[in-house]
Length: 183
Image (cartoon, rainbow, N blue to C red):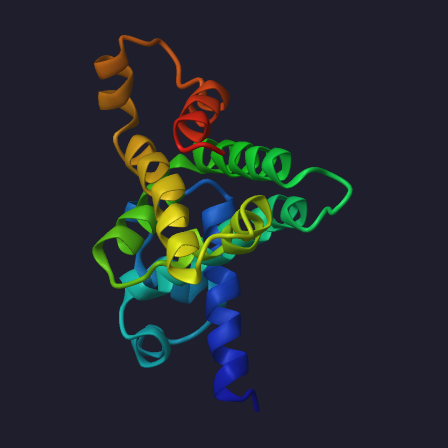
């Protein structure tokens, strides 16, 4: 007999597989998840509280898996810290744009919750760039780096219209943004 953790993991894995098939998260039903996982529908609410919470966890899993390469960039001490920051932000922008629907769900969740998960990824690199900053200054700088990028991604079409652009040139945006912040 499987443990509760095994069952929960199995349900999460089945939901990730559905997402990776390209199914719009809004169209995923509890019945479809239960069929894919070969479990009773009630187990979804028992282990995750709601379909929405399960889908959020599944999306987080997908994005975390594809983001590993970006996170690795931050630890490559052979590259200057300011260049690593740019490479990391570029890689994460590519992921956000590729997984647009999933990213918007995660960004919305982070922006509307008490979570500050995204800025924490770059705290170390910002401290490397300017070791004289206090912990609070580094944390504020991380928010200043990340929040405008999140805003632009959440409102991509509006931003394109506002800037009178055809496509989102994220590398140029990152460079302009970091330059304005003195990074």
